[in-house]
Image 1 (cartoon, rainbow over the protein chains, first blue to last red):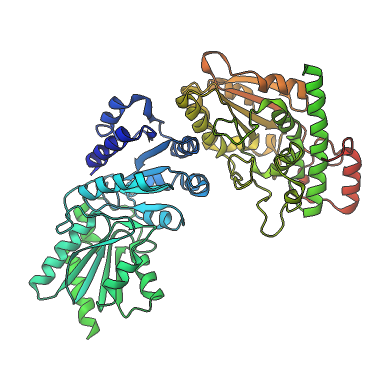
Image 2 (cartoon, rainbow over the protein chains, first blue to last red):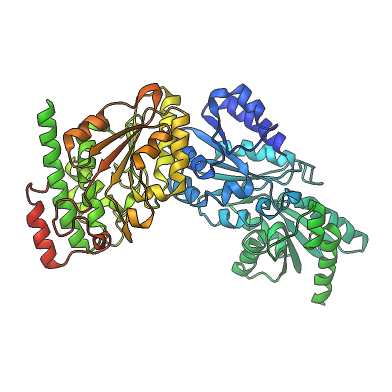
Amino acid sequence: MRTEFLDALLTLAERDERVVLLTGDVGFTVLEPFAERFPRRFYNVGVAEQNMVGTATGLAEAGWIPFAYSIATFATLRPYEFIRNGPVLHELPVRIVGVGGGFDYGPNGITHYALEDVAVMRVQPDLTVLCPADADQARAAVRATAELAGPVYLRVGKSGDPVPGLDGRFRVGRAEVVREGGDVGLVATGTIAREAVAAAELLAAEGVGAAVAVVSSFNPAPVDDLVELLERLPVVLAVEAHYAAGGLGSLVAEVIAEHGLDCKLVRCGVREVPRGIAGSQQYLYERYGLSPAALAATAVRSFASLS
Amino acid sequence: MGAVSDADAREALAAAMRRVVVEQSKRANVGHIGSCLSIVDIVATLFSGVLRRGEDDADRDRFVLSKGHAALTLYAALHLTGRLDAAQLETFCGDGTALATHPDSAVGGVDFSSGSLGHGLSFGAGAALAAQLDGSGRRVFVLLSDAECNEGSVWEAVMFAAHHRLGNLVAIVDLNGQQAFGYTDDVLSLAPLADRWRAFGWDVLEVDGHDVAALGGALGATGGAEGRPRVVIARTVFGKGVGFMESRIEWHYWPLSDEQHRQALAEVAGAPAG
């Protein structure tokens, strides 16, 4: 997905000469085309994320549109207060780009797992949070930033494999339904949406009709779309490569509670600090109940418990 | 205007600013008075002839009060130079005011909201880089406290500015030797501060932070050779101008009693508040 991100950014930078790219020394073999094409608008600021965000804020205040790029945990958590008191407080068009949602950096260990970035970013009222689920959505999300006057957090996953049924659809503030079904719902964000669709296929084979929706936008959150989906479903699984608290599961809980919906919620996320636990993304999904088989089993249990 | 009259004007502005600081901090019953007083002469110098910011145009010089806890000094300067009217000044720390003890860019004339130490210099580095990309001669001034240099993020920005030859960036360090809980020498030593900035590639000037002529010279000129950014290390006295406050740790936080207010006003009453 990083390559598609960069392709879209090159197009954006071609059209708008205010676009600047800063990186915290991340993006080797990915960002070079930008550096070669726009050398005056590319800065490797070194391993210094606070200064990267602070510098981006100063550039944005003067009319530039900086993209600040690092691994998702480093791009969001280390400079978080600089994001809060900088682009958010001053309503400036800084684009924080976090690479690797959830367990994308599986073998690299816990320091590289972005398990709370969506939670901390979505609570900032004026920060648009975009989490594309596949390569086409990543391109669309980068394009969409051109219309956003305020700050943006863009969570860029590693895999760009297409989410079946999504067909590149992406709208800021909207959810995209990729599969219909009346027994259970699966709502997913990010590249793990593919696992949700695969789980729905397993459920279909067992005679359980599962709807699947992809939420790629928080702030604005697709509240109306979620209400429309959830008011006709008895149970929904919120699926995210993220801690169970604060992210998509919490958003869905807020929507259900605030709209008085009669829909049981099961938050499928990570509920412990993965200390001393690394491995492939697939292994970690299995371990934390996020593989297609585990999600399908959870859905069956949840559906059965209603009757 | 010659050098002597420049200095006279700055001293008059500084005296009036001290009076505003003492009066408003008493009216609002808030502290940070000592921190406000130590930078009065620096800010008075910036606002009398150094900052090119007559209008709100995008190409004005930028000023970041990175030691945001001294915002009252900035409000005093904005008030006395006609950017902040008396009615708004009187709202300082009141309910619904935009004038908190830390500055908010919602206030006209405040370029950047601050209050969390260690943030301003990286913003300033970006602002200076933007000016260079724009081909503009505008300059960026960032006023830091000495203890703010405890923050690692300051040194990230210091490295960045030197590497990118941001000669249009000027940092000013208010070297009053104090922080909230003690003297900087006791809490976390900064020495040798000038050498540290020099070693990071900055053009370093050390001045008496209450000598407005020296400050004018240091801040008026552009940066060092080869585009080096400049740091002006201004030796100051915490609480400068109010004898019982000078170099006393407790005046980081304490508000003034009625008797202290009378005494402080008498000491700073050299010039009428605007």
